[in-house]
Length: 198
Image 1: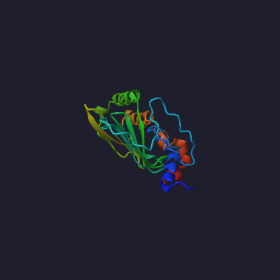
Image 2 (image 1 turned 135 degrees about the vertical axis):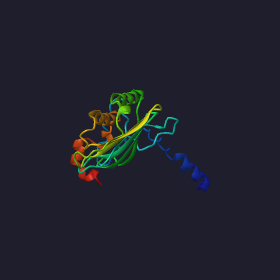
Image 3 (image 1 turned 180 degrees about the vertical axis):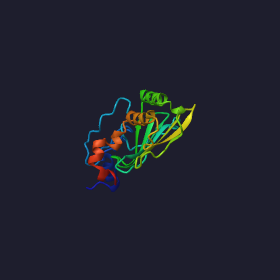
Image 4 (image 1 turned 90 degrees about the vertical axis):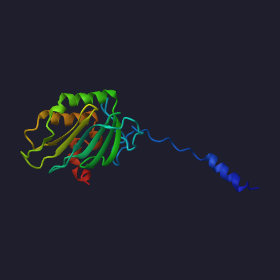
């Protein structure tokens, strides 16, 4: 004797596997064709994630770094580090990961970031270093706002009069957030320039 249809529905529902829990916000989703194991970040570096972190009261931007295009395969992307340590990456071209990815700096990472701005004497820098000493170079735009000061500095890398401390700060921001997990290493960008440019 066949069981009533209502019973069959209950049986099927009871046997259906439960959905897996959502991916942790700090998990890295490997790119197609890449290794399933992401590069190991430094201690304070945030791993990549395609999932935005939960909203919180500390979402005001602490620091930003924008890198623009050049005549070549310079990576074009933007980094935003929020006061709560959230890192927002947005890749545009000549990068491994295009679009948004997210990470999280711990307290040590946030402290290191603030120290980098202090070491560069960011507050005493001019707001613009954009003299064209040479052409075809990329630009970087760096901002910092810690509640006591807010400043933005525009830096054209063809301006030979720009202080070296500014370039060092830009590189330090990249290092602290471990940006190569998203833009790839320089060697990867050279080898995959045609793919990354799309």
